[in-house]
Image (tube, rainbow, N blue to C red; front, side):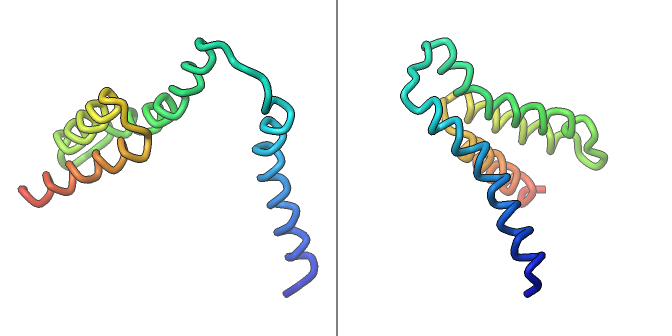
Length: 101
């Protein structure tokens, strides 16, 4: 393998790792207020919603497919599941729905 490629992989690894490690090292002992803990806890759900909700309105074949998937995700999130479980619940419900059609 070319040395340039190896150094590029190492550089990309550092660029990816540093923004994740530095806040932990610099602010690892800082206690956040309950308000900020709640805000940060809900960031993944907000990001998931921002990515998924616009696509529901652009489904060409079966708009009900998007609505059912969205409803399953909302119910799972409302019950307090983490983001991975919300996505998996939506996929499972839509898999069952597509087998019924």
